[in-house]
Length: 195
Image 1 (spheres, rainbow, N blue to C red):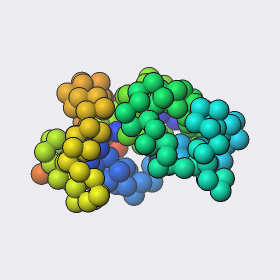
Image 2 (tube, rainbow, N blue to C red):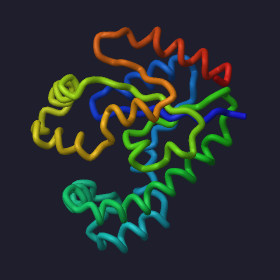
Image 3 (cartoon, rainbow, N blue to C red):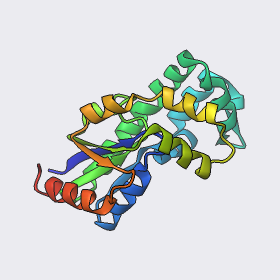
Image 4 (cartoon, rainbow, N blue to C red):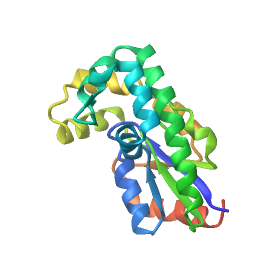
């Protein structure tokens, strides 16, 4: 049986970088955020529900109007919750189907909001990539110069606190001045043994 492992981290913590190292180790990785975008553009049932929620302007030339959706949900928690009720179950079903096609001892589900969405409950183990908020803000400013510090802090405030994530995770990868590869190799070895 394939072990289902989540890998997450606050914005700017480096979860995507860590996931790339697992990929080098030939671990199959399901990128939940990318699949969610794909499903919102290609799954007719999902699209119809989004149109019911936001109206026909939710799509332009048959593609999700991401800017409009982001503007509408950014400060409207109720609307965001309704959108999540549409998208998260679709991603969960898509992930289950994907897992059934894998032959690896374990797979990774990479997701920014693994804890916040509740999808961690359907996984066997969780890896959390951790870095200080100060460092994460610096990384995001460098990566996304169009974002203001206020916007970045607002995104961080909507995610679980770092301590909560660390406590809920089975493994924690520290991504500040520590080397990532030795930490990843140690976790990989344990997961291949089913630990």
